[in-house]
Amino acid sequence: MKKKVLTALLCTTMLGSMLMGCGGDNSGSEGSKPDASSAAESVGKENTDEDKTDDSGVITVGFSQVGAESDWRTANSESMKDTFSEANGYELIFDDAQQKQENQITAIRNFIQQEVDYILLAPVTETGWDTVLQEAKDADIPVIIVDRMVNVSDDSLFTTWIGTDSLLEGRKASEWLNAYAEANGIAANELNIVNIQGTIGSTAQIGRSKGLEEGVEKYGWNLLEQQTGEFTQAKGQEVMESMLKQHDNINVVYCENDNEAFGAIDAIEAAGKKVGGDVKNGEIMVISFDTTNAGLTDTLAGKITCDVECNPLHGPRAEELIKKLEAGETVEKLNYVDEEVFTYDDSVKSVTAKNSLDEEADYAVTQITQEILDKRAY
Ligand code: GZL
Ligand code: ZN
Image (cartoon, rainbow, N blue to C red; front, side, top):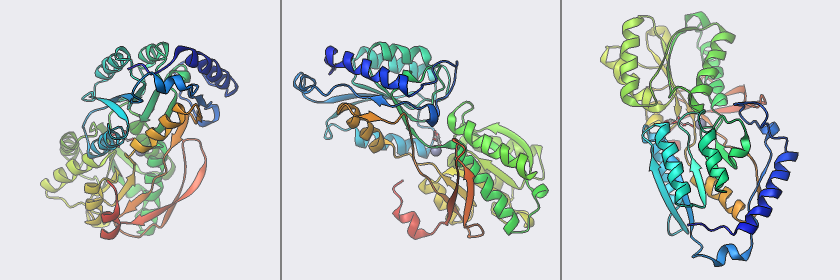
């Protein structure tokens, strides 16, 4: 339902574009991803009282979700549904794209037709969004990108983004592996790694794979093979089975999410091998991402040795952005979420890594306990 009053919108758009201009947006270069340095701020619409009087005050939100491929995704969907509930004053139109971009594009066009107040998009992969986001912009519907990033020619095609730094997540995992090897007397060239990648072209896959590849380059590990497990347990198991047939010296499997790790563990154990951190005695170490409840349960049991957090609870964060925009306040273009690292043992207490803005920092590494696990929200 269209909430906006055209006049209010026009003056906001002009104000918004002025701000964007002074923020130095990088609309010039084709396919450039915005980074914080060029991140201009977006301005919400004028908060005129016509906005509130011309309807019941319900804010309609169209959310195009990637799919239901993983525990992380399920937690992310639940967070969005819990937040954008009728009781909280929203009408949520939720669309599950079954991991297909064409379904997301169709959903966005439907949201435009239905004249929603906001479009939320969790993009399955980074490219191919310019046309449909231009259509949303032409319809004056603010677009909030959630979780993964879009790679567009003009970052005014979306209002703001909330998500996590996948490259930092990958770098944390690599720095942890190096520190673990040093602490446990494992020579770098003894590490024979296979990488079960996420959905190719998704921000999480791009960042986590890059983090590993940088570690291979920097520390001299052997990277035997990389294949996508599409962030699912079934595909993760299938890929691990084939990798075990190809290579008899695997001692590390770097899974780009917990569900791939669950599949890989099943395949490794079915092959009569053991998962764990004791690679010098034939165990295959599993590194994973997401720190879902099931993932950290496996970490507590020593089946996953290191699980790097990727927080899915973006519902309240997205709502905070919408409230600011509704109040005509400015919002940051990029809103990163802080995340931790959890491990089975305490060989490594902290890692130093650079985020995707090349800022170096130390990150605590936490040995998982039942108490910590019981307190976590997902
Ligand atoms: C990460 C997110 C990824 C999760 C997977 O930001 O995009 O997608 O790591 C999920 O579990 O499928
Ligand atoms: Zn993440």
